[in-house]
Every structure is written in structure tokens, then in C-alpha cells.
Length: 356
Image (cartoon, rainbow, N blue to C red; front, side, top):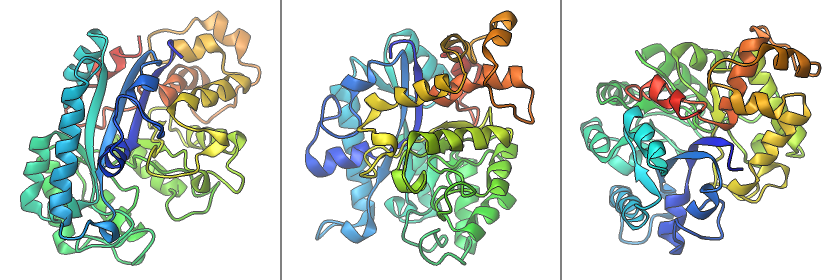
């Protein structure tokens, strides 16, 4: 795996560490730094998350948000020899140059800051770069795609969105209701992201995105993270079904939009028999089996591709509406730093440089 650069837009590992006492450096959950270090370059968005229905007795969601942030900082300090928290492209680039992994912070569910637009600045001070207004439970900002599915952004939700953008935090729409999604797209002035959602056309779960939703995120300059949770992949949750989501999004012109958003440690059953981050290269291998050569996958996003090599290896490449050469160049971003000019002042050139 040492040649595979890897970016993942969503995991709940900090929550798992806080609740179980597991250590980020090495554990038996989906993700730890020991396994992550096997990749060529590695960056992970760590979500602060808490189920509102499972708040410990005597606590509140806001208190849990502070505890989660404290645990994140503790893990960063304890593992500063191998990973550093990053807020900008320059910082991510510097981490890679120093041989370290990069950690980017997000919030999943605005209850952790009281659903208060006045507290968005606090989240920005923490280093949060993505924020999902809702998780599965609706709140005063919006309905979700699980409950209150017909309720979009409230006036307070619109104020909250404006404050997110003022603080250079990307709105994450992976759990919001369909009306809420379109409210965000209509009101947002910058990129919109769905950090862990698949294609509803292939797996008709409301947590997934319609084709029009994917196009709207693409057109905003945002990104979509491929979710590895088996029920969001397909009836059997096979590798073939997972690859089909990749190819479907590429057919929608998503070569600069798609990345991984595995939902590691936020779900139980991963697709294709995966047990954790160590198995993500199976997706890489499956794409190779579809005709994407290893050389092309390694070179993707890292400069010019050898055109003779391209022609020699493309017999089985799926043709998309976009130029096939460009698709091949960008495909490595699916397993690499697919991201992230969507992080508004996370510089694209700095991110792209991590590919090679």
C-alpha cells in the first residue's frame, strides 16, 4: 500500500475512542494510525459526532462536543510524531513533506455547538472545515433524510449556513433532508460537500444522492465521499456494487468530485468484506481489474500521463461523457487526495502536490 496516497472525508473514530477508551494509534476498530501509516500519503477528516439519543446521563450535546474536541486534541498531542492537525493546504503539504499524516476536523450534527450560529466561530477556532447541520435526528435547523424528511432549512438554518460560509466552513449535506439539500445548494455561495454518500440511482436509500444532487455538488466545486457502509452500497454490498458507484459518478462528470468518505467507525458492516482501512486497497485492485492500470492509477493527478501507456491499457476502460484521458488522470484521486479545493482556503495546488 506504500504507493497509494489516500484521503478519506469522513470517519467517526474519535467518538469510538472517547466511548470505548480505544487509542487512535492502534486499536481493533476500523481505523488506527498504525494501519494508516501503510499508505503512501494519508489524510483523514475526523468527525466530532454524538448520537443525541445516547448522551450520557447528566451531560448535554454541547458538553459532549467539547469532550470530543478535547479527545481529538489529546490524540493529536499523543501522536504528534506521526500525525498533525491541519487547517490549510499549506499545512497538509507541510505534514506530507515531514513524513506525517494529516488530520482535518469536521462536526457531524450541529447540536454539538448548540445549533447556534453564534457558536460557528468557535467551531472555526477549533479548526473545523466541514460541518453537517444535522445527523439522523432532525433539529431546529432542518429535517433529515431519515426523519422529518419533508422539512428543509428553517430561517435559523439559513442563518447558520451563512455563518458557516463566513467562517470558511463547508456545509456537509450527507444527512440532510432532500428539501434541506436544495435549500443549502440555493443559498450557498461556495462549495457544498457530501462527505459520505453514494448514488441513489444504484442503491435507493435516502442517505444516498440523486444524480441531480451529485451534479449540483459537482457544479458548486464540492466533493462527494464514497461511503463504504454496506447498506448504502447495494443489496449484497459487493465490490462490484461499490465499483459501480464509482463508475456511475464518473459518468456524471465526477472525476474531480469523487473521493472516499468511508464512514469508518461510524457503521458496523463495510462493503465487500472489508474489515477496516487496511482493506481499502481492495477497491484499488478492483479498479485495476476493470482495466485501470497500476501505472495510471499511481500517476493520476501527478502530472502528465504517458499517452502510449494510456492507449496500451485502455481496452477495458469505461468511456464517460468526459474526455477519457482526463478521466484516467483523475481516477487516482478516488483513492488518493481526490478532494479538495472544496476546503475553501485549502489550496488546490498544495493538495494536488501530495499526489506526487
